[in-house]
Length: 492
Image 1 (cartoon, one colour):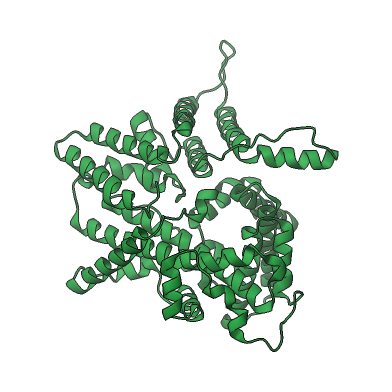
Image 2: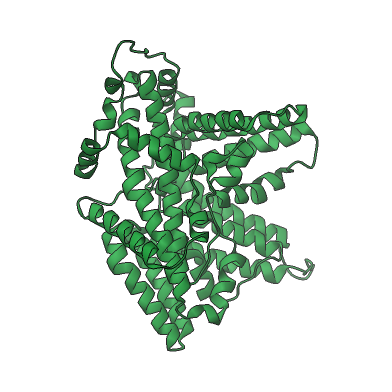
């Protein structure tokens, strides 16, 4: 089920919300927890119930492994009985999770490349359908096992653990959580009653996120998809508009999803970690990753970069660890060479930044922003393209290899801005030129306060209430004219 679907907004969410607080009001907190788990599993199964046993099995395995790991800490192996060390249990649990993820996500990628290396199709592809959200709920549970090992988490209640993993606001596309961030909030009985301040804030965040997705990201998607569908014929300005359209689409799509997730969770009095902080305002690649998909950056730092050695050794090893971490981060996003290259170029950029900082040559802020933003935009081409050859063709277009088309009107350059897959966007483009829409929301992404900053200044008054009602009305009316479009990070 999609957050940006009418059945979610008008049926599922009100039912889950009313049932949860009604059961808590009657003092049946365990039943309320079970209700939220069942609602979350129903939410997950909406697409395809075939993978319900997978997520349930993953939860049972990791709960059992986490319990085993916690009870083994502090014990020493005895000669009279076989007892694995905590480190061995952790290794076992993490390995099983990675094998499950690898089987579903990377089997065909491995088989395809092995066949290419052998020069013949000896092995048949499995044509595996990627289970929804498997990357996110796998990483969440790996983080739980590591936190148990570090004595930063423990959970003996299966219902609570199942809620931690399945809680529907973060289940499909994050944020990636620590157990200690969410479950103490559910354990606080004072948070099990309806709070009107959180209801107001949650509605605001959800409305902003919905608007970002259906009115902004889905409009940029038309232009980005049109350009990437025909990379061989993208001339200079068309190629730049194509890449920049995807850069803005991805931001408004994923930050919109995160706003909606945080807003929905606030309705249940649960604060999820912030995942975006105006990443396109960053003045360096390092700062960009401190602002973009912040919970993934935290996961890669805590569970990949630091275990590799971090910056505890010499400069060469530090740079190697950075590069390896981002290659793994790229591969986590998808089974393809484009994702590996995308991760690698970000790793190389971080290495270059580190070496530049050692030279102590200051750079003006405007130049630092320009270099950072356009590097990120360049790298997104590899993230979006369907193949390496397509990515290279788009990049060639951005550097003018497909021609500058001198003497052609700017309107001809931007012909794909008037193409649209929806009647709403077609009507919109007739009234307001696409280029104005483009410039307006480019400026919003790089200059204006983000949704969390706007929420901090939010005051519950009639003016703001009317504004939120207007956002919700416009977004839902638009949804009623077409089908809800999936979020980009559902593919990862």
